[in-house]
Length: 221
Ligand code: SF4
Image (tube, rainbow, N blue to C red; front, side, top):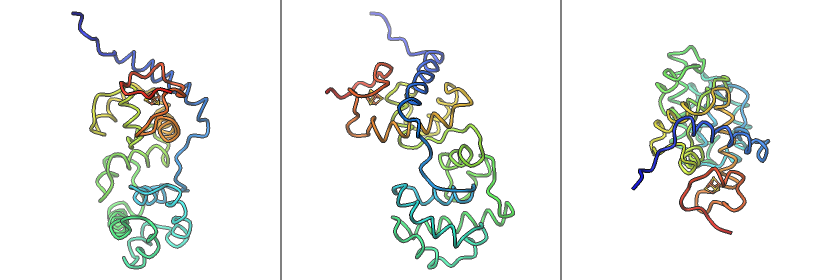
């Protein structure tokens, strides 16, 4: 019996290029849905966004970002005051603590500026690779890949990775997504994941990349 050949790296890169082209046509509005104007605001929004809806985070950050403009402001704030500002968000007590600890480190070690490299970012309390890469990609203009739930699910379904660990998926994608399009690739997968390739019941019959997708549990019309 002939052995099943795994797709080569080149074959995966070809798939990625076609995915980019097609998803760009159907989700031209794809972007990061969190509102921010600088790296600190994005970092705070991402801490708040863990298991919370982006639109709710955007509501809460309007007054928050007016009252707290620098890392020092968050570091100096009392925890109850910070909790009060974000109490509409789930896990607000823990998130207030994370923001406070993270900003205290930014003040103590980086002069109040959010660091612009991965190693320093992931050394901050509560900041993992996903958050760090999203900050680098969206606030510092680096071509980084932040593996969130949508990027992970779609990469797996599309056969671009066999891994389940987000760090390994990031490395797999870094080797096959064209460098200049890494951030865009993430935005497009996020929108496709929300609109078409839903976690529980993907809408395969109406999917623009259906013929590129080897997922075994595709839905039928
Ligand atoms: S064919 Fe189905 S599983 Fe594959 S990407 Fe499209 S919606 Fe997702």
